[in-house]
Length: 149
Image 1 (cartoon, rainbow, N blue to C red):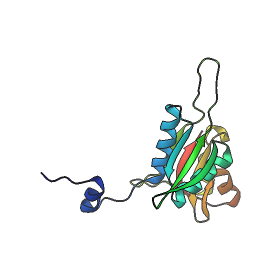
Image 2: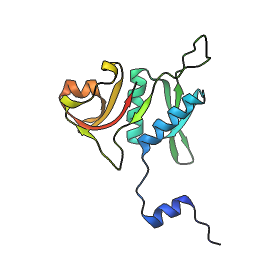
Image 3: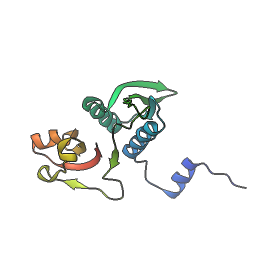
């Protein structure tokens, strides 16, 4: 019997790499649903930029870098809000918009507004990863990565 690991199968079939943005959004969403306070995600340039935006906009409480066995990780401290009826309430929703199989692009005039401007859209532009407000101010469009509200 031949046993093949997932990494070997990916190399054999030539399947593209991972969708790291979707992975961090799913990890954060699952940690919120499971009422975890801390979540650890793999660190890449794009995930680090997205997490910095989440930190700046107040969706997460803290971020620190961690190195383990030649791999870099980001350790995120999540922000939870207590209510009277339930001990924890999910603060926000995360949706992946553009994905590897279907890229979604927009110019700065057609960037969607989430909940009338209360939510944010994260874009990948020629000047880096930024929020919808920053892209509108600079007058540039790009690939719409995700929406958060």
